[in-house]
Image (cartoon, rainbow, N blue to C red; front, side):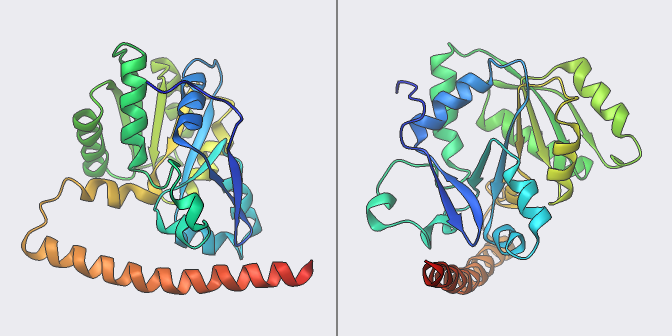
Length: 249
């Protein structure tokens, strides 16, 4: 089991003006342990290439994302255009799948303590899929409630329901920027310890459960192809941003 080490190697990557956290897994492991002991809410958001591009032209959206305690890469391609070859070899948090490793460390370290979780999603079907996925992949997470649809009309009711459960972890899978706006607006009202916003990576996450055959297999191949094209364009934008910043020095 790795020791919890605080404040050693964590840095910020300026990716097209957005500060994304580059953090070693051991560092983040120590922080997560602390977050689950705190009496106030800590927030983690995942960021994708599309979100970075939007933040470059929307200052308010950028500020929303950076309001989190950690803004982590939801997909490895986010850092590929930024990291040096040397840094790519480090055991850093590169995408949402790294949480599996962190989860195993936490579960073993805490002696398989059950953590209560409350889920918020867009639709009942999608939210239930998320609950099922989490229960299978992370058996130490116990669903204590879920909510979906009509949040704008029942905002206070939802906050009260969450507080009645007092979950260790609040997992939110909503569209951005509504997800970030809702968390920021209600962060001081929520009786939870850790909030993880996964709306940006939910499709990828739930896609792990799908059988990659027939139409599903073709759809995945097409998605990988379009993502590669997107990455090539994204990388050019990142390089152009770097050149512009260097020209200001």
